[in-house]
Image (tube, rainbow over all chains, first blue to last red; front, side, top):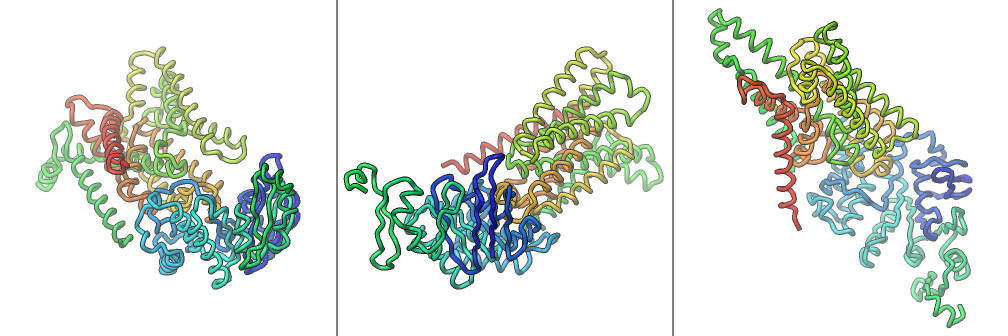
Length: 265
Length: 336
């Protein structure tokens, strides 16, 4: 579905991604992990045409995204970013923005399809009761869900989530990733999620992409990526790798330098 | 809430207000000719002079107030949407400074004496265009349009131009000085029908064109990167809207001088009243700006008879007071 071929890109003369090749298949739920500055967000920005690659090619469903209009791309690919500006609008109006790439171009009023898609997106995310509240009055968890709902109103085939769980408590982290899993299984939505929490990535995603200094260090199931050797090499900090007794997925526990020395890790 | 119904109500109310403002403005003036009296006399076959006062003196002012007020607030609401900054106004891009400089230069060179009624507007428009071209050349040199960069360059253009205008004023003769000063403060005294019609057509076209971008502006309220993710070609939209607002502002400034506050206060108020959706915000700002300027001009030419105040003074005082009131009221309501 999404195919990056030896993609290098960055800002100015400074390359952040260096020759990354990776293919995301339809129906996958992929986590992108890696240290700060390893190129995770740049990966998403390149794949969604926010920045142009300096070298290489990015294909979506076989077509070079450089040759697709932003509108065409946005009708298929949605992004929930780290959030920023307070749009100063009601929650429902925020979700309605997701209809922009899909609506008939010069039709001013909302059509039936728009209203239904907004309703559906808000009911899936459990926000229907908040529809008239200004976005600025929502809690961070609700606001994150509102942006997810806006992305769902886009009816995308591929959804990028950039650190969706930061600033959320564990209950809301689980709630959000459970929702992602449900969308992945029931609607066949392909998901690429940037996660800092290695253990959430291990639990939820069948495939992990580990970026390090702009290159793809490892690509595979949690069992093969989340090993003590790989994580210590990439993150340069001592960790203990265990297996979750229930799911038998790997579990990474970072330890302090002091403890690492004491236990000779 | 049923959105289209609410929008229709808001639009209907604004149109009623607009028509009332026009009728009221047509009906008062230093000649003491009311609309009713003129109509009665006209039916009796007399009162041609009264009718002429209304049609030739007051009507062009009302129509020009409609075009300039609407055009300035439309430019203001679009720019505030683009910059995501409620303090931006049409003059922020340096257009007003360029126009003022053009007018000052042409009046000190005595061009007004040669080319009659079109001299000042043409000089103003030429100055505005020069400022626009300069701004766009500066931004094109740096590649992508950086919103903050444009803002700063625009403010600097205004600074430089107003300094040069002050220089020109300090060395010019007294009769030129009054003309320049009156123009800079802003007035709707232009009564040439061709110019008034041109202003009406151009601002109406501006309103229609702005509607091709109403969803782009809605998306941009989330930020430029989010707008890209919503399928907006952000660079193209920014360029088109800058050109549109620059031309609108240049036109308004060249016909009516630098009428302050309309493009700042009206969009801000309307955002509070009808919400941030540009589908209703654009047209309601246009209509409200027209109402505001027509009423301000009516005050300006009647409140201190036989003197006529420059309308820019009235909009500044009325607009400023209303603005402060709205801001403090909002913080009271939202105060945590």
